[in-house]
Length: 96
Length: 317
Image (cartoon, rainbow over all chains, first blue to last red; front, side, top):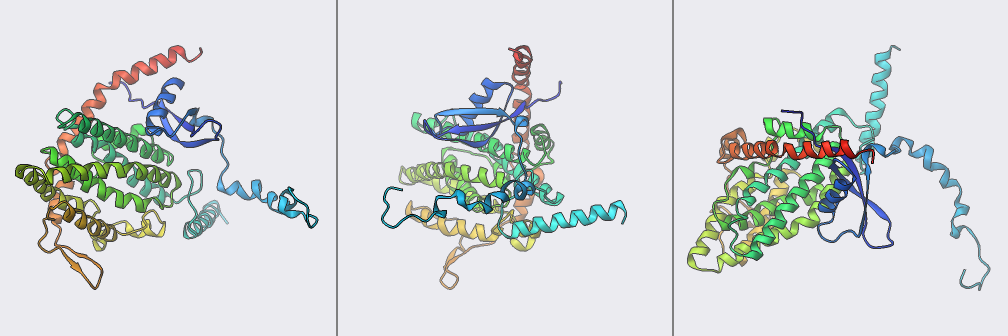
């Protein structure tokens, strides 16, 4: 008997309604794109959870680790002037 | 300092950080550092959970062609499809720990990995399908609700998804039991008989009593498990007794009684001898379940080979 194959892994992203963000759902195994989309539908949208699907080969995803978090995200914290609440608005100004 | 001590010191620092993260209630993601024992424990637990979903399709599949109505047949098919889906969520979660799908299937078929003992019992008649949904899925839900807060994030995410779908399973089982309990005397007797046979094995699903549960210390410190076997079992009993009363069925335990002081039910002795017999391969269906899995896996090999050949032929298009 030849060696068992369970195919490559694909990451599944689904849009819950038109216009919404695509959100990661999990992964499926499939031999090609078409099968990946079909399997993603069967696995992650049995109750109308999705209106559109993206599938991406799992090994094509680059990801940061928790160890990288400080280096990547810390500089954001000392630039609070990027937030609208940083600014003092004149008394009585409306719609701003 | 030589290399080994440097490595050990680094390892210890990583371990300390890991323990701290878990204690703070932070989730662990696949690419985070984790102790080898944590990884191993999770692989064992998640793969066993996945195998249970997959093997669990067999006792239900047994009744697809004999469901008593088209409605019942459609529902049963949808439920079995869900179980297959749940197995896939869990296999995927387990793969993030570095084990392949092929290895997991091999471990199931060789007996190295276990699946829930409950699926080694037969579904003898239609009332058993009701009892499986109500009691077996009911027990699984209690366990899975608790596991939604497990520390390993992919496992937790799979649990959240499964819990959302699982309550339909329990309701369909309870509906079958309720209908049969108020049916003809024969039907109501069948419902009671199914409850009698499934009650104790359902209680065993939560595993040995806390004092006899190996491996649990690490699992709690690392927040893989959040509640003990006995706590979960008690929770299941307390909510199920009332459900049995509503449909006029009797829990087959003469020692079952409300404990006013503890505000929960006291229950009789579980036959762990039976549990050990079944888990060690001597249950009514152990051999049948694995033989069936192997047969279907082998018979389906040509489909996988054909898909692979098709991919190779078309990959550059």
